[in-house]
Image (tube, rainbow, N blue to C red; front, side, top):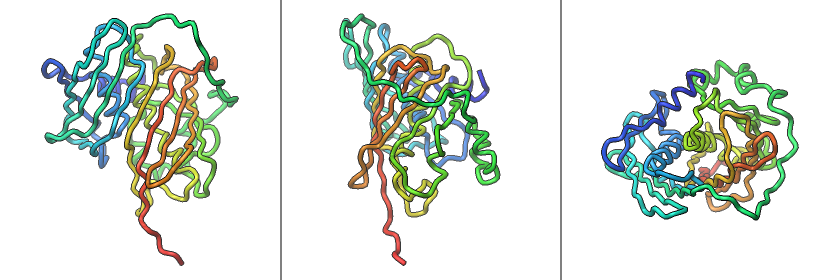
Length: 286
């Protein structure tokens, strides 16, 4: 396990404060707000810590306010229901006395199903044939010094051009291989939480692909609004997974993106949807 992945695992090892209440920390980094994938992963971990049997099969969440990276986050878990096959939890993440994030998660006791199908995995190059993200960004090390200084627990190998490096609109499609940077324990909840963390790293870039805007643009404001995931089949996030994404629509200052994770044998293991706020100040016409 790399130091970066070990650090992420520590972030997900929440401190129990009281029954159904947990405290999570953020990395000591120069960020304006907490990374959304971190809050989602920690909230899911808090929910899972209160479930005795079953694995998470879905989560539905809303980003309510920007998180403060300098302040711990309290996660309050509401044990809505414990049934024979399903358990449901609601988690509210709180900072400075206000909710910043809300998550509902459902857990399902594994059972056999007679009806099965899935869409096929796209044909793509193997991850070993692709350069690492570090290698692709090396020519920009000086401009991206802050990125290189941060720990990166998720290894990424993009197929095609990097979404944030071009300036001409293209199809709202993005594909890359991802995996945790090291071996994780055999804990399905931990693998699901790391997948939730990783899933928030690329979806918004897919919404921006057709447009001549970038995160660094002074007249652009973007933020995740909600994030939903469905965990279909057992998987390991420390093995290569293809992250296949597209963005079917953007309208009214909101865009939407879909993502699917496939294991190397072509099995669809996770799918997700995210809606994002895409505000653009009026640009001067020349």
